[in-house]
Image (cartoon, rainbow, N blue to C red):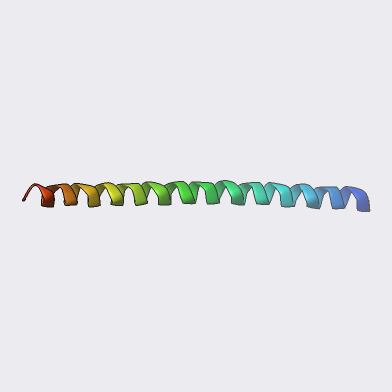
Length: 54
């Protein structure tokens, strides 16, 4: 493989890796947000019960 092809391949590989990392980070933050929303909803439900005197 000549040097130009090798450099192109390495760049392509690093682009693929960074896309994969970005996708995984997006999924990670989505899951985090879902947990955060669930936790806020549970907290609100708890506050509502307290407000109604339960």
